[in-house]
Image (cartoon, rainbow, N blue to C red; front, top):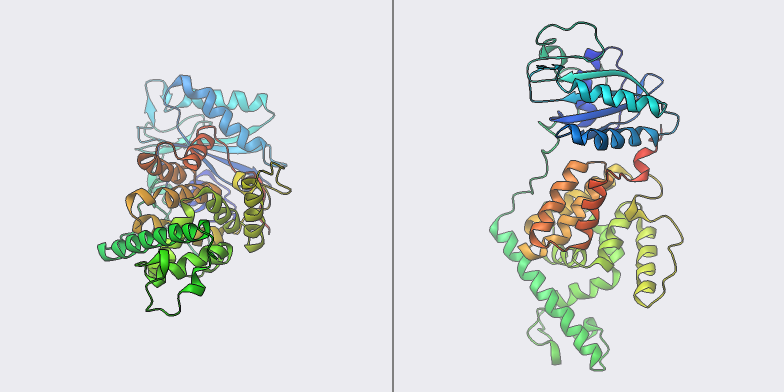
Length: 394
């Protein structure tokens, strides 16, 4: 949810926060930078496991706030499944004291520090709290938005929403068969080219009934035609965003799975989906030069690293829905590319928790997968795309 909402009291703030996040945080530290009385974004981190992790979590949280232009104040909210009070006072009170101290050293001010626990809520900065805090009913998110603001779905927790779509066996078989036929067609084209042929399969298949000629006998004409699409992948990537993922033609699905399984083309898709068709062509041209031995640096922002203008969130959402469907429909060994793509798109959308789940699934299939490993490393380091620190256009 990109709308920014003013909340003048802690009670109102906590009731609105799940709408801003899109979920009810659990076992989390939520950092909410504040500018002119309005939220300037939201970042969620896992709670520190123990005192030894305080420094790492605090450094990540403060680093996020420091990267926001003209922001020097923030609110911190602890969400815990434990009771509000423990033997030392309010749950995680020691960590909040440490966070406030480190914030002061960075020139930052914590305007409020709140705790939402299993049995109540309250402020760490309040002088006196009831034994179990204030009632959780006071901060229920249902009906919390002001008039005129349409509610968005609120997930039960930050991890909800990563289960892949349910795909029936027939669809999986169609996509799997189309992918196998496409791979055979690509091998035949490569063989034909190495043998001195034209490599242009389309001109050698006179009609849809024909099963192939010479070295491509037995390969369905549809697979050969799909292989020809691979020569115009940026256009295919763009057109795929307009398709309903549930109604994807098996041959198109196979072409996309094939491309996402190859870094040379996958990087084109992700860069393009984060901006536009021109970016796809530019990325493909760069990759072609690199493959030919040209080691010149990219001329513009590297989209895969989160550089450049903030993407259109709706465009990223469409791409994410697409690759999730592809991951669900593809054979297990071929799911790695779509899963890694889902991880990157989630990271680009600022959903680090979702990104971590997708790349973990990719790593289960291929522990050495490059992009999954890179995303995992960025998540462990708390690295967010630079565009996450840009203010959305008014």
